[in-house]
Length: 114
Image 1: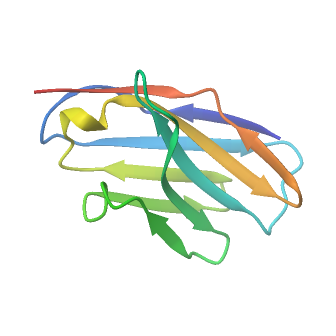
Image 2: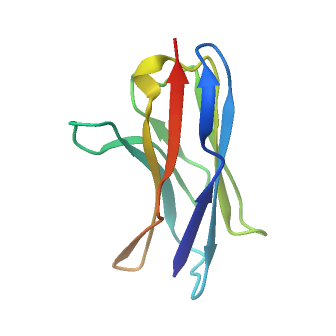
């Protein structure tokens, strides 16, 4: 399974970005997909995840601002990020779990200027 993330960029505080992550290869219908982020000098942290049944979870720091969704016809997961803050600056990675395996995308940089 390969994951291709896109959509990062530079945005001013208060702005929005939408990240996308497309999965390809041997896709299983039962799976979980999510987004992590890693800021300089910090550990990678879970931002949000979504199951194939649509159950979602969010880090407290992004609740009410970020929305995760998925389009299984396109094997894609999205992260709509609104009201962005400078502290959201990080490399964002998508991740997929299916069966007993985990897969990571290459990361996309999000930079929020104040």
